[in-house]
Length: 100
Image (cartoon, rainbow, N blue to C red; front, side, top):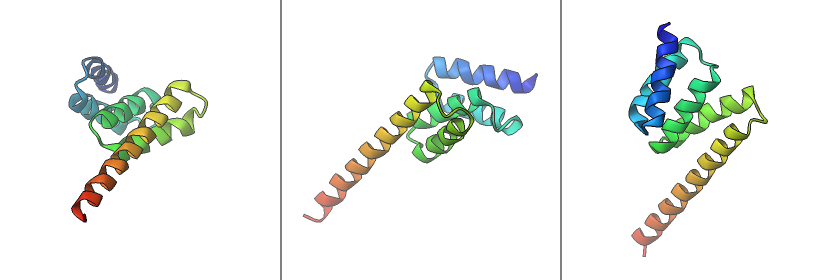
């Protein structure tokens, strides 16, 4: 029962775009069942929105291991890759300005 409540709370916080709380509750749900697709998705989405790209990617990879053809998970994976690329470009620009 507690596991289910944590999953539902994570969903509520995703809907409210309260990424910190969603990350917290999805992590608690994953402690009980580390392969729960809904908790993995919510955790990955929350981590992405908080800029925690390594955590987002790790959870997304688990999702794709479970369901490689799921369009929602594939989109999440592309979003993570795009944000990773954008982050690396910002770093490059920042470092190039430092050494001019």
